[in-house]
Length: 145
Image (cartoon, rainbow, N blue to C red; front, side, top):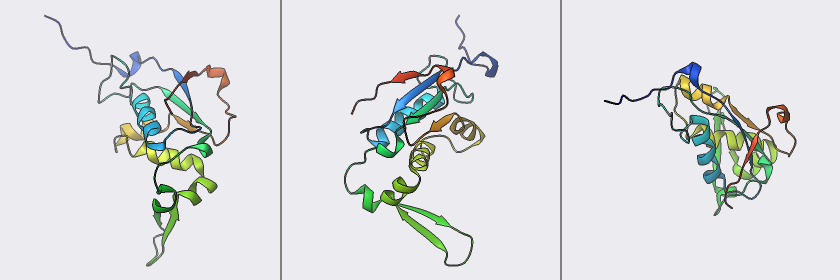
């Protein structure tokens, strides 16, 4: 009788992947990146073990969104003081911090526990084409436009 193979933390082989976000729809790209971070593309995927890989996202400032999301989508932040809720549109957030837009989209697709917090640390996002991870020899992932 065969038994199910569960991955152990020590057995996981991590690879590095590179994603070019230029002209890619934000939500579809975030879904693919979240799957790689979780390890759902591997046959040894185990929900309670971090089996995912490292993902580098470049050209975060050139990501595409559909519809009227540039003006309609809002990011909220509360300072802790009464009445001090801050609101920022997606257009303004892309201009000031495009890496945080992608990080927030991917974080929304990861589990909200200590395992998810470990997974999001394997995501590296850069606004331009330069990244400091050439020594890891990342493999390019082609996402459909």
